[in-house]
Image (spheres, rainbow, N blue to C red):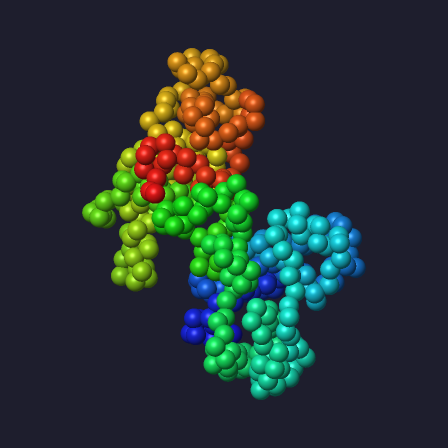
Length: 379
């Protein structure tokens, strides 16, 4: 089925179960490599959740996407489909607590898991197909893989377009998970429109998802106008960010671009790497940006004070900044205080939560404030 979806460039939303993910690293890696496939949650175990207690629900709802992310590091969406379509108010409430925007079921199901022929599966779906309908199929059904090529051809022949669930439900919005009343809506719209911090082709932005270090490097370099077309590949700074070779190039230029943006961000002092256990210089490009990382980058980009206090234990002080944070290390006090005083980021009294992960949606707001303050935001 995955091969058919890839060869026909067909988008689909895959609801994955945690224990099934663990059975095959190869399958989840194949899914992660296809940008048209949206991954959503089908719980940790395929059981009737309405028959389980609260502790079980809290442990298992979200288990599908959690195991997938752990195995692949790839993006997931914010949909939950309860096993068997069974749900009650408690299931819905806990799914919402886990951050799922919608619990969804389906409109059309040919009962493929019961073993009907490929022809019967196609006939059943085509007899009920309508605009906006959600069709349910199963990877482990015996004849679905054989039915899928003909099903795709038949649906397209009727003039329909196959889309992911995010694309179906987002309406006129740019992204399903960022609605007009979302505080990040304007910033996300700007960052995606200008290509500085793009969303996913599946139809969502991943606004609540952690921002990767490589994406922050790209957004800073492009937004600040620091990118050049010249790429020096002779002396890579980091062992985990290398220019492509004939063996690793994917033909899209994405690896070269990632290498270039990261090298430029580091060269301009906006970001930095560290040392691995073996002493090699590393950047950790796919690691999630922390709030302190974003604050330091913004302070540097905006030309704000970034030096640490001159004496241990001294209150961070400049002509305009008298803030002090109990949870920020001394060497970052000045930068964090400056960023908060300038209104780029906020704090809760004397607490900044420096090591909390930075979400893509919030980072879009911070970066737009930065680019606007510097007169670099495009109209």
